[in-house]
Amino acid sequence: MTAAALAAKEPRRQVQRRGTRAATQQKLDALLATAAALIAEKGFEATSMRDVSRASRVSLAGLYHYASSKEELLYQIQYRTFARLLAAQQRVAVRPGTPEKRLRRLVVGHLEFFASHPNELKVCTYELESLNGKRYRITEELRRQYYRVMAHVLAELMGEPSDSNQESRASRHTALYIFGMLNWIFMWYDPERYGSVEKIGEEMIDLVLYGVTRPGKRGRTSGRRVKKGTRKHEPSAAR
Image (cartoon, rainbow, N blue to C red; front, top):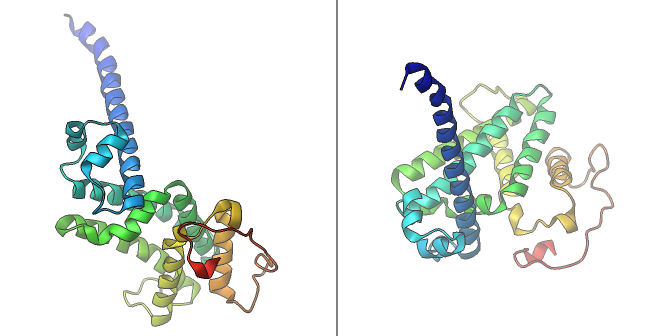
């Protein structure tokens, strides 16, 4: 075969390789989404690789091609979820705007990510301690990086040096309060009952900025009623 003919075939080979990688990635995405849904429902300890194999319709041998163990599967779910969330929120944090506007974007951005990845974030909240060794350390570092993105904007908002390595008690506690609201929203949130995540995010920030005795500047939270009903995982205090 001539050099010209080989050169003509090479682009087709590259397209085929890219197509194969894309198909493999799609299959892995679907597999991890199925595993996340099972672990979110049953818990990590009660979920087996055979459960994931049956639910994903992937053979057990095929499943082990993607993950060498159940913990490796959990690690891939957590790592990919935090890495994607961190990357998205880093882009949000550097957009121009006042510290208040950037904080609002971060909170709403987290909730929008939750709306499209509820099982993954539930698994990340409940199952970090199920990871061990290097997998735990890598995942925990991603969490710390995400915390620092939020803490940096909060420090600016509260008039503190944003480049300081030393947090004040007030800014650290405020960051933890915000993450507490964000991380446990899956326990009670129902879009039909409580509205969009954008509205919930605005209400959260109004609560942080103005407290419970003063409505937000736009009066978003005053006089709002929610539909009556119960949810399986909703705390009784929220009913």
